[in-house]
Image 1 (cartoon, rainbow, N blue to C red):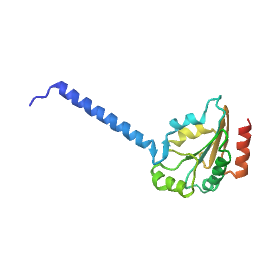
Image 2: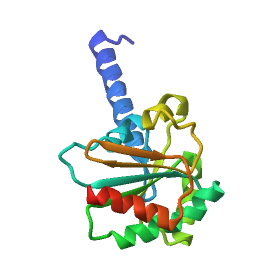
Image 3: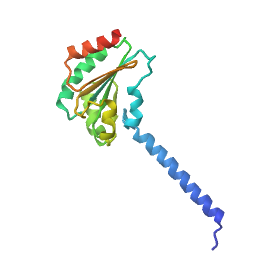
Image 4: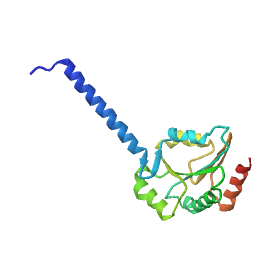
Length: 175
């Protein structure tokens, strides 16, 4: 049986296209687990640098389901989200849980505690490459919070009380 070269090339090209499509579909599935968006740091980093003309205050709280101080302060972020719902503020909970724990840990945690704020997962295993980009003073400990408005940034490596968080949000909203 003889096979001509053009048939082999067509077959190889078809295999290549199939693999590309399969990879694209798997990437789409990897970007979301249930209702939770999953990002690498390169995908999420632009959120930490909104345009200077944007007058929305962004609050990014870095947390995880295994972090007791994080769990303790989450209700304060929820309460702030409700209090400032009509304001130009966006509070985002950035989970640092492992991607493999989203279905069994993060989603049940969110449902059990009735968390209504947006939750995203930062699933980038090379923390040494991105922690300094969030803030040079950050050692990676959580909870941690980044607040951004226009060109101003404030980073906090601490657990917040409601009063502390409310005061900071008010300060940023008044700018």
